[in-house]
Length: 470
Image (tube, rainbow, N blue to C red; front, side, top):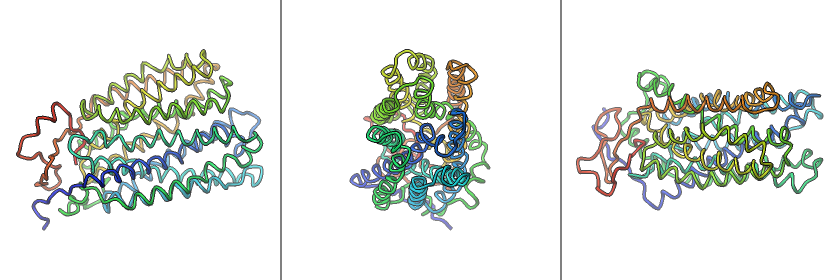
């Protein structure tokens, strides 16, 4: 029989920095690889892999392969969520990073349509699927690595650290393309320049793996393993067996709709919109996106601090409301302000507004599920919603732009709708706000969360909302 209770392992303060660095590096590398593809889809792949007489059709075909990566992400989420809930977070994350790095590097050496015909887009599609599978298992594990190691009263802050990887990955990806397109001629950039950005992934993965292999398994998973409370059946089966978990899966997916649509508008579609419809300089557009991503990276930890003070759900809800209010002004500024108007709108919408709710998202989703199925639950919510929330957004925006005769207002209406749906779903979430001891609490009941200690919570904790159970 399993022991009645187990001491909760703690992480030494000096090792917490390694945990944070590992989590941040992992998501940075994964998002760099994933969104490097999105940047190339808008600027390069349409011409090199999907040549047509109609430039819009070529771009949409390139974005279609971009969307396929999101179809593959749920597969990766379920596969690696199952492994992560059964054998642990650490080993799972080492494999996801390796898979992503190899897939991205291989894209960098692919022949073009002109060289091998239909085989070129087919190989590109296969590697995009591999990217999607890898990222499907990375995000939830990286967030859990930080949240489950996070100390008392700082779950929100630690949960925000891996979210910075999204901003840094976008900044590195667009920055790399901006640099290459600026120093190389158009012919050289299309010939070999874009490939260099993909091959750099191997170096980033090597650095990330070196750090990731030095960390320990999370305290929460070690307790579950010590008590022999690992899932007896498939984690997905156990997740969907309980009514409350099914409810959180559905509401969580809807809550993410606005976030996915927002990021893939400002970080993906806006690049193509600015360079094709607005006819802005490509390098200047990429630099504007890079600047907004850097601002976002700085602002996300502020969101983490607010999450510890206000609660993850409230921070996420307010941020989603700000997104709804910012859509129409942003596109108006896109069309009237030139490159400086475009950059200003992106810094506000992507750099500040998106950072506000995205920094709270990981902690909010982690607080919805029990430790035994948390990896699977978070992956299912984030990756399955990515199909409609993220993957098809550039396609929908491009189609609505065409239907509107080049005016963006129908597309803006779609974005506001996604924000309102997400706000409604967020208000319906019943996430657990559990006080976790500063000392060494005990897990006393099978398949339960850690319970508060008998001693009172320190007065210095004030009114903080401690989101995200261990």
